Image (cartoon, one colour):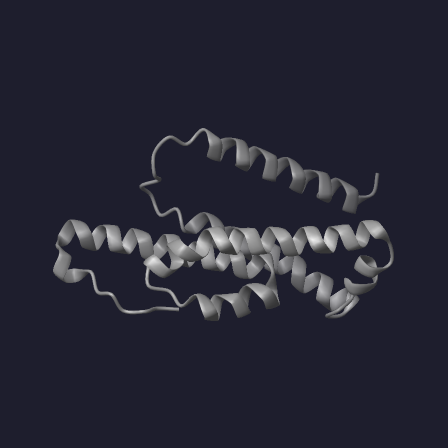
Length: 145
């Protein structure tokens, strides 16, 4: 197996373990949970930067349009991004974020933008929760990006 295949399998294993751990969570996370998606952005953005540097900005396009499997992977990505955005956008709006801005971020950066949106949403939710405990006068309804 090549290193790329090992990395791909490792990524699959980490994702599977993360999903299984999430299913075991019974309560809301009290610690700064926004650090998880924010922390994942760093290595993912580094891998993306490496890919762009070595294969150019649209180097992925020939891979996606060369075969039916490439097209399936492309539409799978689009469907997953859309579904995740759909599920997250109500929470983001409730936290005071402008969804329109985040559509552009997610559509131009994919998973990086989605992780950033999730981190920002969870961060604002935690801030609102802390504001609710201090009193309703500290919880403003300003729109944030």
